[in-house]
Every structure is written in C-alpha cells, then in structure tokens.
Length: 260
Ligand SMILES: O=C1C[C@@](O)(C(=O)O)C[C@@H](O)[C@@H]1O
Image (cartoon, rainbow, N blue to C red; front, side, top):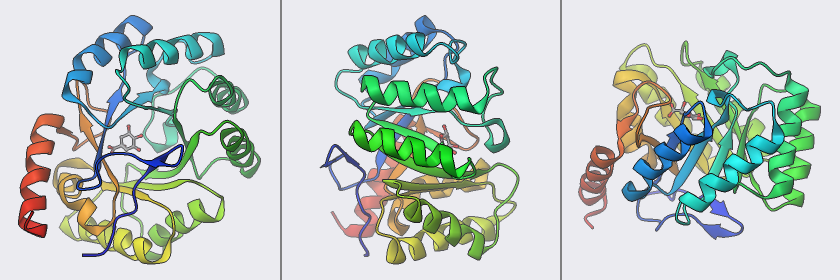
C-alpha cells in the first residue's frame, strides 16, 4: 500500500502512524459551552481538537479568542488545537466581522501561540493567504489550506488543482471536502486523493460528506488522507461518525487491509 504522509506539529508526526488521526470539532457559541464540549471529548482521546471559531460569539474580540484558546488548551490534556474559521460560502456559520478582522484574529492567535494549527480557505485573497503563511511560519504554527464544496463534487481536474494550489501557496497540509451526489462522486474524491498522494509532497486530508460520503471517512486513509473528522459531542458537517464507532471501524478496516 502507498504511504500516507503524517501531519506534523512542530516537526513531530501526530498520532501513532498506524491509522489516520481523528479530529474532533468544538462548536460551542460561548466559552463555557466550548469548555463543556472539551470536558466531554477529552476522555475520548481524539488526536486533534478543531475549534470552529465561526460558531463562537466572541470571534470579533481577539483577547476573548486568545483567552478561550488558552482555556481549551489547559482543559485539553495535551491534545493539540486546530483553529478554523470556516467561511459561510464554504459551509461555515455567518459571522459579524469582515475578512480583514478574521485575518487579524488568526494572526493574533498565531502570535500568542495559543493553538498548534490554523485552517484558511484557498479561495481567500492571495494577500491574506500570504500574510497568514508568514505569521504562522514565524510562530511555528501549522497551516492547512482548504477547499470545501457543500453543493457538489467538482471534476477531477478541479479536485487535483485544489491539492496542487495548497502546495504552491506553501501550506503544511492540503485539505479538500466535497459533497457527493452518488457513489461515483465518492470514488472520484478517493481517486483524486490517491493521485495527490503521488504528486503532492504535503500531508493530505480529504473527505466526501453526507451519508454515502461517510465511507470516505472510514477508508480515506487507504487512499492517502492523513486525518478523518469525527463527532465528539456535536457534529460540524454532514456524514461525520461518532468517534467511538469510527475508531472501532478504522481498527477493523486496518486489520483487514494490512493484516495487522
Ligand atoms: O473542513 C472540515 C471538514 C468538515 O467539513 C467535515 O466534513 O468533516 C468538518 C469541518 O469542521 C472541517 O473544518
């Protein structure tokens, strides 16, 4: 089987390498609600917590963001944190602040070193992508560049170009999440992931969403996806599986696929 490149945090691979890492979203609106989620999720031991800050009421207040990130970290028992503002055109929650303030919020979080990774969409302005690449590198924070399509699965050339764009723009990880209309679309996403594994130097994350797409959350690592998103307390996208069920299923697939 071809190799899946591991996601690294400050030069160290995350997870044991035998299976994809499990990322669990936090979607609370307030700091206490988020900390309640963290308390419920930490015993389930995901490899990475994704703080979906587009759900957070205090997104416009960088101090509140940094203090909440620090509180998450204190409660997370060593599990690293990925900070994600998913924009509304790519499936996120509508937010009250302009893009310039979003970039400054991300920059402040990087400078405070209160998270380990950030995620920013490839569709953003080249200057904003450049700024976040610079400030994340300067502070040792990993940068995922991502593409999401909650309506459909684009053609193979478009899928290939998203992985390639992330590499060209200097990301640490390339991520693609798309919605299938049928089983062929799930295969198209898996095939694109396998092609990217052979042509792109970066670790990859990919998934097909929705009910049928959930197959990709279970077997995407066989095609090169280094991570899979699972529900700890609340879901952040259609098709996510409960972490306990996903972990058991991944172990079964791994045993069947590798014989170990
Ligand atoms: O991009 C992704 C992937 C995702 O959309 C999913 O389908 O699991 C969930 C989001 O929280 C995350 O930012």
